[in-house]
Length: 182
Image (tube, rainbow, N blue to C red; front, side, top):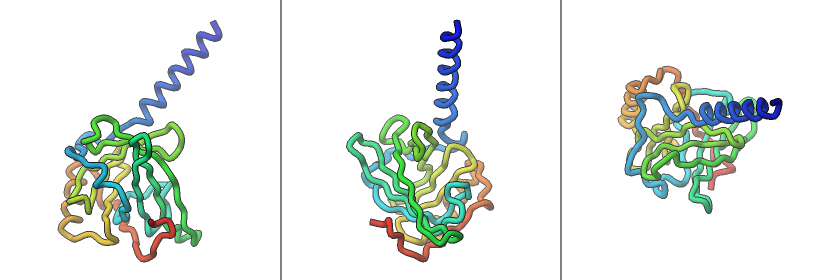
């Protein structure tokens, strides 16, 4: 009886981890379709983001994407912690949640725990708007350290339509070259 209880408890815990770690995206967000991961690979500069603990006090943040042998995406996020005066970097893996032609992925930097990574707007694979698992996570990325004003405004409008409070965006300083940049 005790073993059955433990097995039930472990099964319930595993199910909760799966449910909460795979939360995908805000209700009004739609991932880009006809997505070509090969065109998305490479270096992206973080133009703006919602602040959260893993990127706290970072400027000059970049994300670098490459394919691994399993067809998943290797992720290297890095930035300069201006309070500690040092560069930091973290490695992760992103996997498609379904069809590889749809830009709905899940990313993990910490073992079996995944979070939503959804490209919800994409301009010629030069500029991207990324929605996280909920309305607490949002990024604007660019292949360059700047973004044209019209695209920036289009992304802000799109984010607001999804339900984001864009007044919370932090505009990331991009004035250094990362030692992690390829």
